[in-house]
Image 1 (cartoon, rainbow, N blue to C red):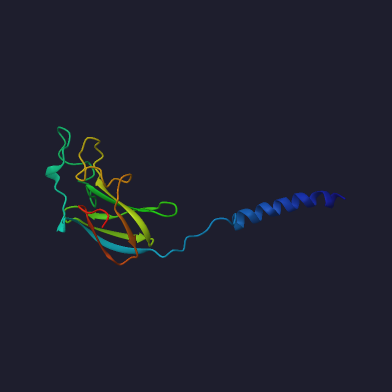
Image 2 (tube, rainbow, N blue to C red; image 1 turned 180 degrees about the vertical axis):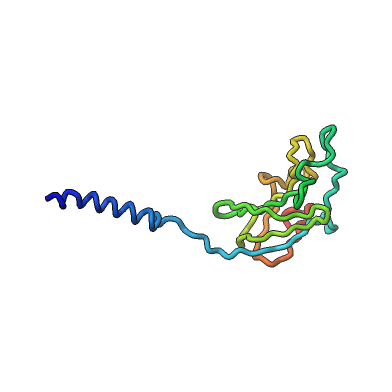
Length: 157
């Protein structure tokens, strides 16, 4: 009889071990292959580049704090997955050339945000906030390997 009483305890302990070793079973691994792309910003078909002279900084500030850091850009471009969980991938941007590169992005439909990364609330965004993460109307299908051209004068393409 002593064995019969401990049997439910052993079954419960074995269940916990299986649960923690195997996992809960509902977690799905995302095996979607990741792709890369390159792109450039244009304005009415002409190459666009960051013009720091048009940015209004507070008195005594000559550049955004992040702009002088190595491998940084005053402009950020973020790809926000339109479907699913809204994954965000940040592009490597060369603001002076108006170009960007994205590595490790899943194919799909993305909203693309383009904005000044200044860390300064009073700095003026060269795009007037119209391409912020909340307001952007730039939406593109990403397959990978393409050269993406974003004309800021025609955000819908």
